[in-house]
Length: 225
Image (cartoon, rainbow, N blue to C red; front, side):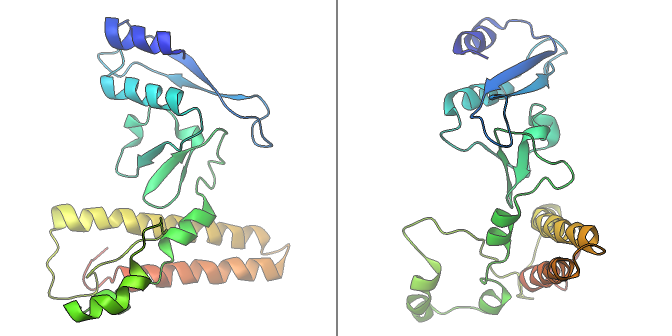
């Protein structure tokens, strides 16, 4: 869509019928066409796009792949404007990519591993940390630069209460990310089982490592499945 087309929709409430939207994209080994294209259906009364959906189109158009576009995992598929073919999971976010994603493994394994297999888990947060201890941990935890990974604060402490309707439900998003990463390696294990025993064993061990880390960082005793 051009800026003029988006302006017409947003300012004059131009009726929207199901149509294919094409956005230019850099050519690569994953996309030799130089664009991505997907079908966008009306999201308001079967006749128009809602403002939030028009904003998605505007953001994608303005970013021009110079800046990453993300959806939080808490955003349901129905609010992602039909972009499922082009988004991959990186942990607690989905990133829009300028090419089609393998729907069998719609995750970025490298980014998922970096974000989820962090060392800041129950061994640090299961007990109170006194103020004087922060000085020792500052260089390890805090940084002025971007640092990947998540902090699993207090999830190993039995004296912290978690509201089932909010905290526990949100924690399932983290568990879901771990499970998808584990499933990725399990599927790779099965794919190579009768072809490359060494590679198959690597993926088997990684799948188990992911599940172990999930239990370490989000203990089942405090945060039931």
